[in-house]
Image (tube, rainbow, N blue to C red):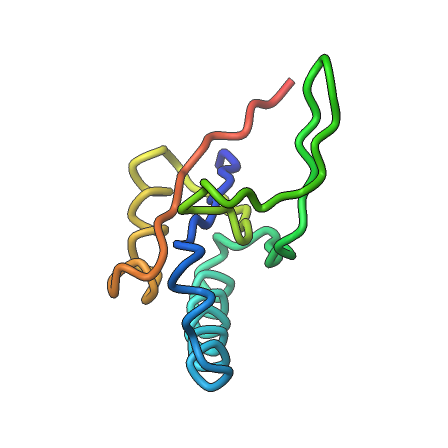
Length: 113
């Protein structure tokens, strides 16, 4: 099986508007989904990310992010095992927050050396 990284993308405006109760309910949905893919043997690792960030380029370090002009940010990641990109995409699409449109997931194969 290959490893895939699922980059979780969320709308920053929606995150700011959520109540604590809504946020906790979404966390529980994600925990339930991770438990499902753990039981199926596909889960490897995952964590949410904090909002602060630094962008490093060859010329500068910009550390005032997330940036005002950004509408979407990567809020977490999950690493899974799957037989193919198609299967990894199907696993990503089984996430309940993808179903409701609250998040998007970018599915990327992890290159092995």
